[in-house]
Image (cartoon, rainbow, N blue to C red):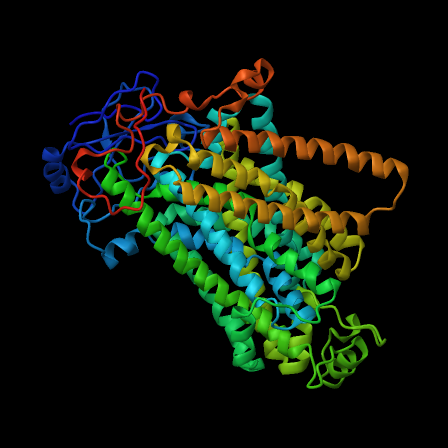
Amino acid sequence: MSEASDLFSSNGGGSSGGATSSQTYGAAKKRILVVASDDEDLLTKNNPGSQTNVAFEPDGNKAPTMNNNVNAGGDGPGGEDFHTYLEEIVHIPEPNSESFSFKKLWAFTGPGFLMSIAYLDPGNIESDLQSGAAAQYKLLWVLLWATILGLAMQRLAARLGVVSGMHLAEVCYRKYPVVPRVMLWIMVEIAIIGSDMQEVIGTAIAFYLLSNKAIPLWGGVLITVADTFTFLFLDKYGLRKLEAFFGILIAVMAISFGYEYVTVAPNQIDVIEGMIIPSCSNCDEKSLLQAVGIVGAVIMPHNLYLHSALVKSRGIDHSKKTQVKEANRYYFIEATIALAVSFVINVFVVSVFAHGMWDQDGHKKNNSAIRDLCISKNNSHSEIFPNNSDVFEPDIYKGGVFLGCQYGEIAMYIWAIGILAAGQSSTMTGTYAGQFVMEGFLDLKWSRWKRVLLTRTIAILPTFLVAKFQNIEDLSGMNDMLNALMSMQLPFAILPVISMTSSEKIMGDFKNGLFMKGLSCVLAAVVISINMYFVGYYVTKSFTPEWYVIVALSVFGALYLAFCAYLVLHVMVSMGCRWFEGSPIMRRVMHDQEPRILDAPRGDNYGYDDSDDDNENDNVERGSTVNS
């Protein structure tokens, strides 16, 4: 046996040709004892079907033991109180085979589908139904391109995790000085808490509908506390079983919203035209604002941090370029499939309300018409529709009631089941994102129940107060505010991931090429501009034009833009710009900290494999290697 050098050790050291490279999981920095190729058979015979990883105790004095579940360490002795998604590493069959294999794709399948759940959370579902109600099928192309844009960003996040062996928060911890790092952490935590509030709202409304008002909204909010802790213990049964459970929740959403789609039976030609024709003729301001909101709802900032960490759950030899390249390829295929599934589910929701909310003459239904329909069907929720001629504005609650009145009561309950699956699944992935962010940015090893208690308390307290003392319209209306809040945090995920993946010192030969650098910058500019417009519109509509409000917003806006500019400068540095080196002030502000991120992590040739010299068909920009 041979012990590989620590991934982030300061003294460095190369890895042997037949050994698997070591990896550091989370912030606890326990190590993997790796096995040379000539020892693999012996260990496999002693432990059939196992992955050849050996757990190494943190004090270095105990003998190594064979264990596939590599604990990340933690609060208690031996780390028994600290749990992480990365406790188990999935074995990749035939790691050195270059031919495509469905068996190998299946081994890589999991992280992309967990990532895709953020594209199906209750906030996205509400954005979908509102876009269908506002513009029928005319905004489906926006949803399609927002999903493609999201895929491009998720690909960068996954590549960072695969190539560097660190997730985005861990790299940010090593790259940025203390103040910017803490500010980044705060912004990402705000995004996580905002997403958590949307999930609590969706889950509470689902319980309210399923119980036919027997479980009040505030009761549903409290239930989400208990069920979150319950679901979090599922990963004790194994990583693959946990990923299968998430797959079941996605299937529940697909079946539920697919049932609504088949029941409503929208015009398929209109659906296809809406996806492929980029236009929005006769769209009013509300429709255009909804188009902007789609982008903000689809691309979640904390999801980039999550995806970059989830990919570390597969056993990859980072010292071999062929394996890293192969992992990037399979993860991209898996993410594409996962986001294609999420896109279809989102299309189901948009189309259901694009068809159901409009009459044959192209007029949108009003409140009194829907109220009369619900009363005629003896629906117990009919009182939520005011008896006036105003145009009906749906949300995830009133939209579900409308489906029950229009297409039968079973449609309302199936809608609620879909919302419940969306809320529960996104709650769990949000919790994992919070774990990785806290460990990465702050190097804190909190036991999971403490992290969940902190973030869930912050999310539940205002939600509970609104549910208890206000009406359900106020609870549903919080989603618009939360979408605006999370849109503001997007630069603090997109800019760092572009910066990291464009740096040769971090990515080696796998850094972004010229085309990808340009494309990612354009995409970032588009996303940030769109969301700034959305936030600006929401702020101007939500705050009174008093002088102190204007001053406060101006100060906040100036600080916000200054921080964004700081991150943009780091992107430029990572892409090779050195124009600031002539200025002592700029050198102090922008001193390049990348060399201390990877202090000779795998020898002198990072990301480079001599055996791959003759294979140039890898779509990877070749560059100089990184010296220690």
